[in-house]
Image (tube, rainbow over all chains, first blue to last red; front, side, top):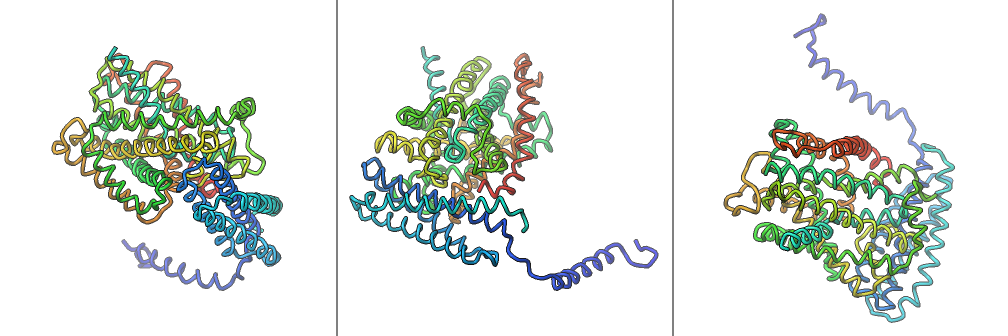
Length: 168
Length: 409
């Protein structure tokens, strides 16, 4: 079937597709790179810190129960190892985030704390693996203190996320 | 006397077999994050599953045929196919999650990574489904699942502020640091976990496996109306234990190890060991149920011989489907995907597929040609219709909520 201009509908579709394909790079070249989304950055920060708080709480609770011989040894090791994995994942994801220009320093500070929290959980796991009888005495207070610190950061990021509207 | 023993065993297995990996993970997550403020969703879900399980069980007892079989005949191959595709996809995903759940449970006591365990467990599940009698699978794993009663004991041992927990249960509220979209996402996930489609297909097919007749309707109803709610109480107990122990520490449940910590706090090593036995029994039992359900669904739709009541040779295609489903499930787990994440996805997609499962059941259970005088009464129809509206809403909301909240993150 041919229209008045002698082109078939399928040819017109091909022409439209070619035009669209050509328009995409042209239009892309006309826009400046977008700055990182501030709201999204705060939300991702809140999630990363929340995950680390959860991992710290899990490690502290596991060590406390292990001290009272209330846990099966493998159970304690697996649970803390999984908490460490979660914290490491959250810290890694945070370090891969592109912060807004005004938040560069803050991103670095938060990243350092998340790395230290992950390291602390790692040390606690090692103490568990070595059957250290004083593992909880040595690590529980530090895990709790770190948890409080990360929780404060989480709350600050949540407050900033609420202040900044989506897309800004 | 024998009849009463049968009813008692049926109730016990219904209680022990009620909880699966979806219930374990989702209830613990919700308790840790939202306290008991979503507990009423669990109650609504339990009433819903009782309602539709009773309908599908009655269809099996009266017609002597399982749900899929009747749906295809009554609603035609097209509607049957829609029903099949929706529920089959969700059942397969749940099968992956359940085998992953068994692997995670065994990892807790062996320290062997769940990915390494997956192939062995796949072979074990397949062997059970090939060799074991239906009643043995149902009764042994169902009774062992009663080990999860440790959560009820733990709750009493933890000595929570009952008034506070009760107040949370009857209040629609969320913690200040959570959003309403996340709250609704978990509400839909809990609803999906409580009303998982495979449960009704397994229940009705199980009725045919056990040769239920009209005389067995009262036994079936005892299982449903006593066993299921008591099983659902375990779900609430898991959520309550998480509320008491994990919520104050800011722990967000992402592993099965965290789910068991409240029991360790309350009952110590022995209690924890019993709870892990419960994890294994609940997930292994559900893995067998979902594995069988993949075979039931497909075989009943295409009219093949199916079931454990005939020799494998006589139901070859049914057993091939189960074997293929097991290979697919193990293959997915071997990619290293987190079984907890699969579980989270499976309960949300369950919610998504609910209308495809429950609408045909209500239609079929109202059909006089199959049901005779045993069609739904007015109460079942009014409640069923109300639940169909609910499942439709949950189905429409499930995927958008999952995307908006980033799977409840």
